[in-house]
Image 1 (cartoon, rainbow, N blue to C red):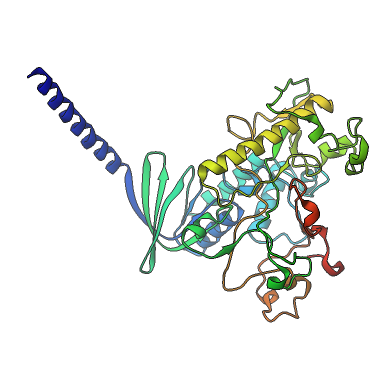
Image 2 (tube, rainbow, N blue to C red):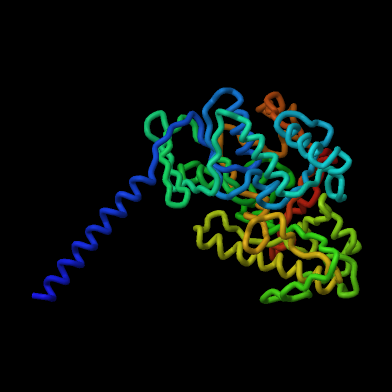
Length: 411
């Protein structure tokens, strides 16, 4: 009798727990609507969200991490390439805000890789202020999109932020994620890797298509602490991997030709305001090869753990072997446990097969193509083809795409 009583009591208790849990989950779910939902708060996502809001369209940006700005902030690549004389649009607003923050354009030229360098945290602050100024724009940070479904003329998008869930109904869904994850989830066709020259007509493309993507990099922001900082030796550290990152006594033998720059030149490549240094060095540095685009979340996390580990090893090499003992990871940049960026520097993602596929020939032969895309251009750049493949095993089989100027024309 006592045993039966205890079993019934446990069943009633479990039933009560289920009721309470159901009530909690229900109370943490909300339903909202908007005209546009932008998946991803990188530079493209922020620009799309701000411009839509300025046109009087109710817009939501859903960003997985705390910051806005993507590659320029959350990934720590706070040095921009390209034409600095065409400062217009949202880009111009951003650069002007940087100049105002630091006290002038000249104070953005702290390193030699770019004329515009800044602290990632400052970039995030500016993007966030720009977004907050728009009454038609709402930003949902630290949130992930868990479900997307098309119903008639609308999209049903489920967003989870901790235990809170929002079911959005929107007219337009924009994929501004770093890897094109939402478009893929919706069934869009896409390519990954290098296209065949016979498909694109690009002379510098390989004959046969492949799935080889560019190296990614877990960038690091170092800070000059003005005194010696002891870094912990990372697991699996091997100094030979970085010996020829710059000209130094450790670089010997056939690899000496790779060390093109003095070490001080390597460090100041990405010198930032605030006595900080961006470490994003491709020559025997912290580039890392992995094609993680099609991996699940767990697979990506493991791949990125290894990429982080390589960067930590490179930082130890700089601090311990090269004698820059005053440099260590900045303690006032990324609010992450390891002081590394939220995300890596992704140089390549899915390429969606849209109505038009933009390729190099539209730049090198703008007037000779069937589609005159130059007539609908939305941006101007002056940077050459710059592929990173030095960390890939088998680069000799790939076309040389490092700062390639097709037909001696800048693209």
